[in-house]
Image 1 (cartoon, helix red, strand yellow):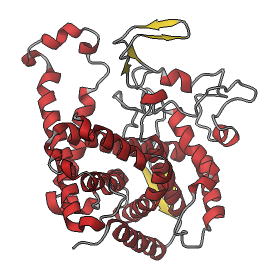
Image 2 (cartoon, rainbow, N blue to C red):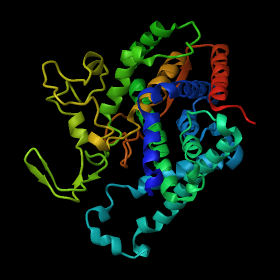
Image 3 (cartoon, rainbow, N blue to C red):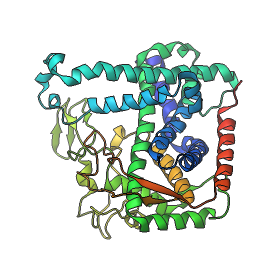
Image 4 (cartoon, rainbow, N blue to C red):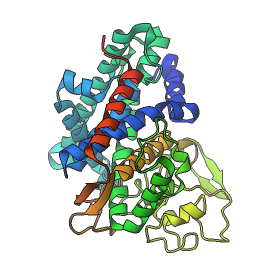
Length: 414
């Protein structure tokens, strides 16, 4: 990637994912979460499809400056379907059980005998088209709003402040870089939320306690406040953190590791020599289920994070310990971690304010049987019902306010 915009890409992206950038995007996440609540109410039990739409809403708006409805209008609903297909194909390509990862010589096997080689061009096609759609919509947003464009949107902001990059979107490096950020923001939120819904449906006592905290904080019979401070909802946050520990998103269901990193220089760490080119993996599952650090680690118990910032047993040494290793560690930790966690906290608060989550059949929470063996731990399909705690009139009013918020933050159509 050329240096004339490499640093600019990273700086702008980071600005939106930490500190004040997170505070600025919170109202957008709140509006998207409110729309999710209403869409679940309207669609009945088809909640997983609504979750996919919600997962796209804030990242699409944040990246391109356009609501996801514009993508449907300009590219058809097929763009959404194709995007999720691209993610399925990409996940298959990252399958940790692929023997080529163990026996590198297999990469020279002809494609007629190697299924992954035949699928790779298809995955690339769908990923490329999805990313190009994101870039093209960003340019439309910039042209529509001109110099007064809302500063919340990453790609239009980049193109506006660096006019020399106006044609750089054709460079696949920039397109892929932005697409990678988009994928991380979408996928981590949706997959993590599915696990959280499963956990709370299977543990109604935790769900009731979270709802009581939300009702106390925001008022059960009152409209939701314009600006939701989910930082006050300590138990809700504990529910989110515990779901990430209990079933780490990045830990393979067929093994304990997250995504690998590669050392670019020789390193000495605690007396160990790590040669350049080594693959480095974090044993996420074992860290998250260490009985010496956690009380009954196999159980979903938000109380551990409510009592202690890192969920540790009483008296356990915590020096240098992180609350989660789901998103990696060190300088290569996922940059969108805080964005995803904030997005999930806000949406969960809205869901629990509006609904009781009730099992509609057996729930399998077993790590081996109840989750797919893929690049990320995702629950196998399960059935729950969202039983309204509010009247439809109250939820409709919240949706009306959310639609106004989206319009004000992204700007109206020219």
